Length: 334
Image (cartoon, rainbow, N blue to C red; front, side, top):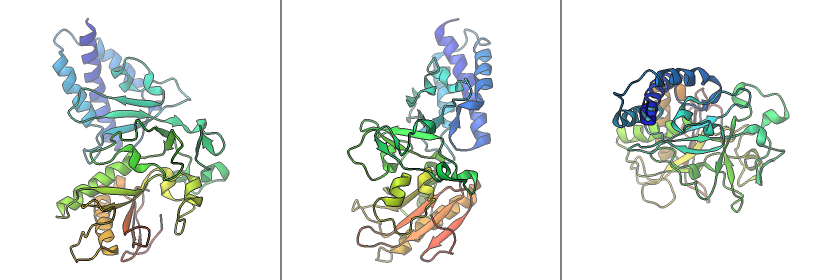
């Protein structure tokens, strides 16, 4: 059997298996620990196909495979892989690359596709030593110091390495890796990022919801994405930040719609002013997304502008509904 036929059969089996896996599990980090059976099934299927397979069939299977991983929005361009150090299981999709390379941190584009898609394998949390990973200062997560109130506040699974060369890598239709990095240590590279693809999926759905409601969106700016624990406690203006902010866990962002490129919120409700009411337009869209997709439910916070920034909206995927800020039902903060 030729290598091309073997490759096509493997990819077809792989795409079908992962399509089912992600349809059942929903968006989230891809974990290597439960994929050994999938890889074995793919290997069995690889030998079951004959000369009728073609390169065109393989390309179609790859496209279906990637589409199954694009999230509820259909707009994700990346999935984040958490390699396990406890089992030797190889992610099933490693068959696309011919070896177990996906267990090593890095970026692994899938081709050929009309829209880009890549797996991004993270550095394990265990590589962090003290406050730092390499030269990059992270600080300490609450679970490193004391028992936490729920598994949602456990240490992150790992860190995405962001370099000057890869920071413009698209993670979805409208967002890139560099949008979410912490705003400090400007001269330190590589930087490290915690990011949940559920958050990216929700932001894309909020974008779509606003458009559906007749609110044009040309650009959505991420004012604050991931915050290292050190920066959350010490960097910039810390007023109003929660000690256990969801920003430290990569599933929260502060955003605003900037349609004219001024770096400030646009007049979304067309009342001739730019204020908290425009932020509330985004928050209500986020609420509608959470109601339609309970797996993406989370916080929505409305913030007014001040001398240093305009109004913005906090959006997260913490797993339970929370509202706070001007004109919102009060609840738990960020």
